[in-house]
Length: 150
Length: 258
Length: 106
Image (cartoon, rainbow over the protein chains, first blue to last red):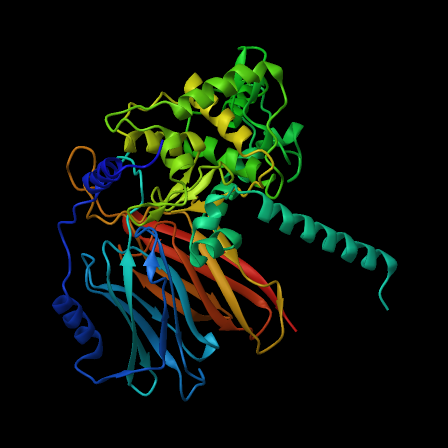
């Protein structure tokens, strides 16, 4: 029994048939507006923020993600908040975390849902009022052999 | 100064590592764990990050809870976190009362009905999956060891026949994906060899822990075949065949899979 | 009672930065999915997580439907003094769970 082109086609069609249809999706434009609501128009600098997310996501239901910000985390100089944004989920603002000098390090790890391949942006709000950002592109693949919602 | 036992155990560890490494190169079988990316392997490896451990914790609480007319807890007979070590590695096992193999969940229900005088838990219910996860966690690292019971042989054979049988609207067999095309790609995913090393698993697709039967059910739905009823003879036979095919591979429960 | 796992080091040196990991069983139903009857399944999510240590909120997270089911949250804090860390998850439909862990700081 060797694999045939026809079989590969059949399997491919099966996968296409079970792909979830997403009705509500944000757009890059909505992401821009959501970011603006947080920064209130302030300049966003690129750097200091590292967004660690697998470039190839094996299942969009649970995508491990961590954010670190280069900061001494002292009373005078620390990260106040970390925000995550995406451009393709129904809501562009995924989370925001409150941190401070007692955090010791500017680090946050969690798991998010992504309904398609897209760009993810992390923004850090610093104690001096400045905003810094890091971004990552992710490719989301679909799981094989899913089941109906039970 | 190093003590003699420390040196001896370091030597034993070295022997173990060499044997292990040799076994790795000689054995072409691969756990689905090895097909996953680094972040999902890390999720499985860290008990404080593995979401399957939530079910293990629920199972631990259920294990200690008195149930049924007899007012007995599982822990009254099987106390401690190691009482069930190795058990999940040797199920399904032959059940003389019904003259057929029963799997771990069915064995838990047998205890509930006969010992605790309680109602059996529904297949794939949160409670039964949690108890199974608590039990299977105790076999982590142990080799899969299906019983060498001649009464099981015809069931293993019928399991293998089911594995090779084309079915469903796509007219596919399990073997066509997981033997013939294992290691290849199905859309973005690597097709695993289909060894039941991690069960019960936290499947990201389910966002929950589920049994091997639930996973087999997903495969059947994917093939556009009619899934068997939970507790059917077909699932028991397939589980038995898969365990015999994976004999000696290490248990990982609760595994994490995409 | 929802099931919760928190991982906090039992002991730490004063001033040491410790990592805290938490998991909680929760469906995080987005409100955007249709059920078998074709109707939307109502939203049911955790909306807020906080960690209070030594009387002060040292970490807070606002969650949305995009947080994966059975939320995993890991963060750091400075070990200031021996005491209790109180974790609280609140959300839709009156969801409220509290868990605590003690730490001994030398």
